[in-house]
Image (cartoon, rainbow, N blue to C red; front, side, top):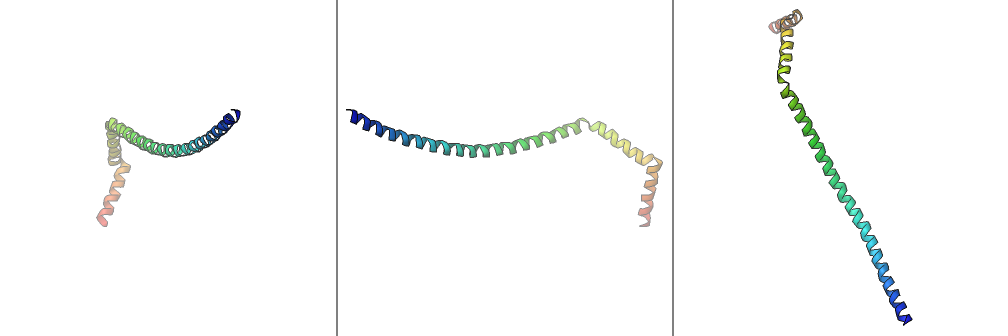
Length: 103
């Protein structure tokens, strides 16, 4: 009876050895494939986050400009009036007008 149980234990230990080797190889391959899949998923998430950030930035600038359009218009009108009605601006305008007439 002892010999049969010893042979039985030997055969079962070989099955356990092959089973553990198979599980180890499967675990390594699974971890590698899973790592590659997560790498690509992370890359696409990164690109998506970049585009989302760009759109948020552009939207923020657009909100700023539309929110301050009156102030920006007043500043633009002031710059135009300064260049149009100041002596320095009139002199520049005369130079441009004379240049256009003679050319």
